[in-house]
Length: 391
Image 1 (cartoon, rainbow, N blue to C red):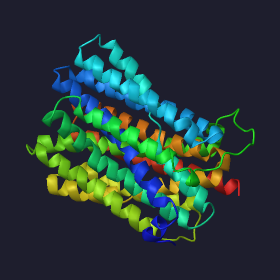
Image 2: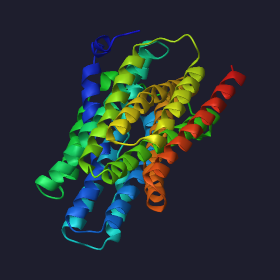
Image 3: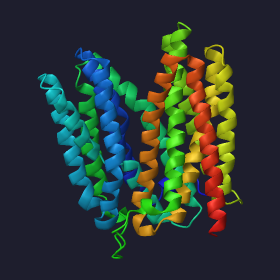
Image 4: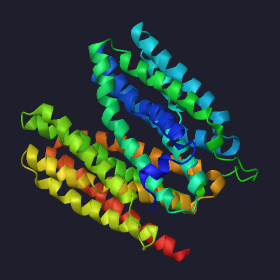
């Protein structure tokens, strides 16, 4: 199994990894930046949350279509146009907010902002082109999962801090600058760009495959866990009259997931990927049970740290299963479906947890995470059985 240093010594790797990291930061900065911007401009939280939710869901729906076009025509021919549409749309959204134009325009441009390409999938596609069928690919996927986590550690506080400290539009504006610079730097690196196949298989989406549907569903459930922990941790910290500690609790989850991803990427297993996914799902379910009995910030931090340790391995294994089960010429679309599923799940988890907490209690909110972890396990069992039937 390759080390991370070995991976980054691959010709061209440092360039597309750094460009991809810069280009994917907007995913973690834009939605929270929209919420902060609108709230700073005295808009209602309902409006702010609604616009951000529309943007997030639009990204989840449109991104697989962009990736499908990328598979057919190539990254350098599709990504610039998608990025330009997203950039102009978000800038228009900021202008609407600044000049206090009709609120429905915010939703229109939030939808068009969904053309933001899923750069995580684009970078993974380049790694797959280099290491397809080799054990180094798992290490590369682990590296990308850690970088995804890093974006969500750095991006939101940076966006919020700029909106509050400078001016309301500052966070989303910086996100768009990152998008423009990152995509430009990424597409000019054509030596590592995946080759475009001439095979005419593009009439049907890769989502028609049972394995892609099942793995996307699993990622939705996994995302619900993340979204639930985010909201319920904030609510728990507030109930403990220690609201500032919520960021500390969530950092434990992110750091744990990053560490697990780095460790998992260096390991080599003799069991099948489907069985590995099922074992990670069992651990995910078991680690969610203690969330129901936390009693203070310390116990919550420890529990969340343990729960976070199984997020990256589950995600990395799911990505590897996609690489193993979809046609090479449709890999980018397959990877994007999983990442879109995760995004949808995070949005659903946040909404569901907030509703349950308002209606019942914080503990009931954490129960959403447990129920979702059980769903992750059930889906993993189905995937394992399906894989065994088709070997």
